[in-house]
Image 1 (cartoon, rainbow, N blue to C red):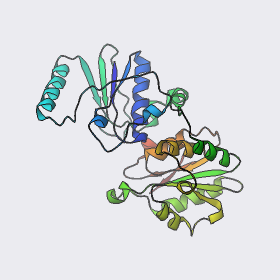
Image 2 (image 1 turned 120 degrees about the horizontal axis):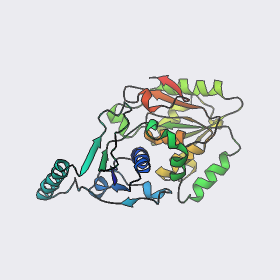
Image 3 (image 1 turned 90 degrees about the vertical axis):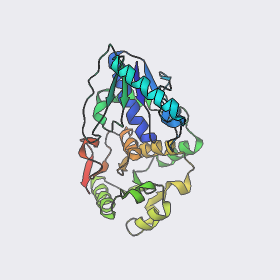
Length: 284
């Protein structure tokens, strides 16, 4: 049995699942998801059930966030006993900025912990992963978005603010200016930019001096999409300028346009390890 701890937002969940799915496929074992973090509250919502993933058994394995202290102690004790008896192998990624393929033993149960933010964990199975990561259902809004951009030379731009403001992780104006310049030079013909942001007013003010308003659509103004659907709206665009975020990373990776141009940042918190070789990189 391969058990993976699922934690964080939708982009992180995709990385965790993709890595675990590949290990389960290689070893021929059942894949189970530890959803404890969502059961006891982590500020995010489990969203993988919105995808074409129907080959796993969801299982709450270790209730790590139990409110009852005694139960937490007992759970921790059980965990240590299992380790001592070697009934389960724990694999926790220590450095998210360094690819390290996990050493798996097909004879033991394996528990995976971490974010596993690298395409290298599943790149050999890219076609399979993309099939798994198809939406079960698309809203009329998402269908309309895809229809409306189908005949345009579309570029998605993701500007993440929100929690990144307090964390000091927001990308600079320079990054987006250079990324737009690169896109203008790389792509022939007229281009239309679709802006995805959790702070539309900031993005509107930020971009008004850089792009003609007639060439820009602020997605939240025009379409009522869920967070998950926004990832697939980004992927529907022919090209992407992403943020230092797994959210738009997946939007770019799931884009099947063979001629796509993807621009990505390289920062102290978002290293080259996370960026496919075919993408354009801007040092920030």
